[in-house]
Image (cartoon, rainbow, N blue to C red; front, side):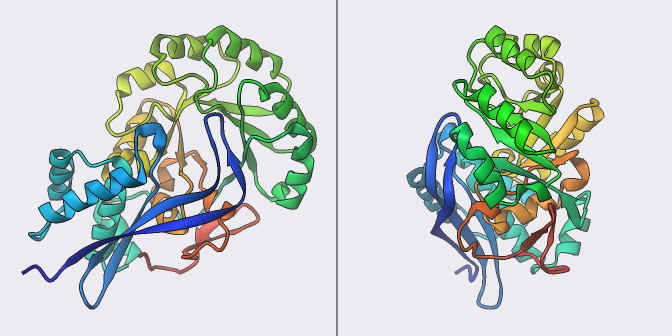
Length: 337
C-alpha cells in the first residue's frame, strides 16, 4: 500500500469588504487546500475555483476523488501528473493545487531548490498593484483612505459598463497613481468600448484589461488597433491559449497560475508573450498567500504583479508573504508549503 496520502479540505475565507466585479459579487470565498505527503512532511497547494470557467466546489471535489484513486501508485514527475490531468480532464485550478502540493513535498519546502529545478525567473520582492472593486463612485474616496491605497504604485480599478466612466474619473481625482482598468468582459459592443476609452484619454490610465468577452475574437483584434490604451488579455488566457491569436489581438497578457494549471505552463505562456514583445502581468484569483507565493516565483517574467488579493481576506491563514509600502516579499527567507 502506498504510504503517501493525498487529501483535500475546503477553506472558507471571509472578506474584509464586498468583492464586486462586472459579473458577480461576494463577501466570502470557498477555496480548497490540497495536501500530499507522509507522516513526516506534507506539501500543500491551493485551488480557487472560478465559476467563469465552470469550476464549482462540487466539481473540484468530484475531480479530486477521481484523481486520488488514479494516483494510488507513486507519481514520479510533473510530466506524469500532467498525463493524469489530461486523462481525467481535471480543472485547471485543481491541477495547480495538486501540482503545487506534489512539488512542495518533493522539495520539502525548499524554495531555492524548486526555483532551480524549474529554472524560474526568481525575484524576492516586487511592487504590486491594489485592486479596487466596483462600488458607488461616491464611496471611492473613503475606501481609498481607509485602505491607505496611496502606498501602492499602481491601482487596478474594476469597472462595469454602467459605472465605468464615473469610477475612472473619480479615482483619477482621488489618487496620484496610474490606473489599470479591468472590465472583466463587461463591454459587448466594441465601438461603445472605444468611445468610453476615448472619453478617458486625459485620465492616467496605463492599460485596460479584457474589455470584451473572450469569444469576441475579431472585435478584440479591431480593439487593439483603435484603443487609445494598451489592451491586455485576461479571460482569454487559460491553459494552452492560442498564442498566435493573443499576440495578434492584444498588447499584453495577464497570466494566472490558477488558469494555466501550474508552473511549467505559466512560465511557457509568459515566455512566449515576452518573446513576441508583449507586456506581461502575473495575476491571481481571491487566494491566500499559499497560492500567491507560487506566483511570486515567476515575477521575473512579469512587467506587472497583480498579487494583492490576500490583503482582502480576513485573518489570512498562512502568512507566507508580507506587503509593506506596496512591495510584496516572502515572509520567510526560503520556505514554501
